[in-house]
Every structure is written in structure tokens, then in C-alpha cells.
View 1: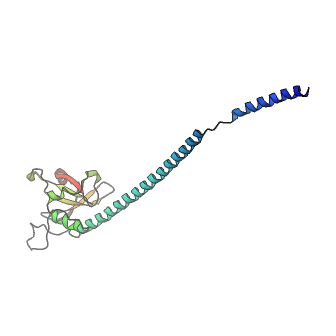
View 2: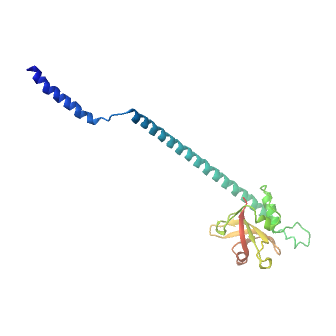
View 3: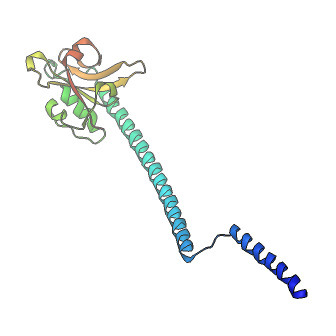
Length: 200
């Protein structure tokens, strides 16, 4: 009689045990390996992300340093050009005072930061990289032509000021006035403008 009583109890316990197993996942060796690989992949992704962020930070710092260095050099170049204001043109120098022409003025200005420009305007127009008028900044070189030169570059100036209102000024050597500072957007200069170059 006791055996008959224990049998249903044992049967119920067995069924309960089977049903409770559904809450557990069977873990295989392959699952463990996959988990290890996923963890490794995540670690690699995280480390790559950290490295890339460090590279970007370093790159940004380098570009900021380069930009500030270029601006400080531009200031020196423009200061050197300002010191030449009033110097007569070579062709209009009856008293044989120190004189210069347009490319001579830019050569002298750039030499203060250790840059040797070619002595001719056409040679200087091949230096550095092209810059559009809307992106002009202090220290950039601007080149002009005239109708008598059939579009050939014959004059160079140096951007000296870029104002917040969009006004732009440049220093150059005028045949009649010597080294002067003029408004870049004057009609005469815009009609004869050819290109702009950034050397710094």
C-alpha cells in the first residue's frame, strides 16, 4: 500500500522537475566560445573608437596650431609691408631714395618669415595654393593684369586687412604713389583681378 502511495508522488515530482527545466538555457562549448569572441570584438571596437577619437583630437590640435602659426606669420608679413608704405616705385625715384616695385615689396615682406618668393609677379602667381576672393585672409597674395598686358599677370599686392563687414584692403606698389594701401573691391582692381594665392 505504501508503494502505491509513493508512486504518484514520485511521478508528480518528476513532472515538476521536467517543467521547471524550461526556464534554463542549455549552454554549449560553442556558446561560450561565441561569447568570448563577441566580448573580444566589443573590446576591439571600443579600443578602435578610443584610438580614433585620440587621433581626431590630435589632428584638430595640430590643425589649430598650424592655423595660429599661419596667422602669426601673416601678421609679420603684413607688418613688414606696412613698414614700406610711402616707399617710391623704382620708376619714379628721381632722388635715388630706397625704392621698390610690386614684386620687390612682396619679396621683402615674405622674407621676414623665411619665405623666398620668386622675383617676378608671374613666378609669385605659381606659389602656394589658389584662394577664391570670398576666402581671402591677411597675408594672401592677389594678382592683377591690365588691358595693355592682354590678360597677362603684371601686378601683385598683399592682403593687409579683412574687415567683418566684408571690406578687404591690400598693400601694393603703385607706379605713381609708391607703396600704398587700397580697397581691394575698388572697380579698377576688380576689373583687372586675375587670381589669389595663399603661401602661408
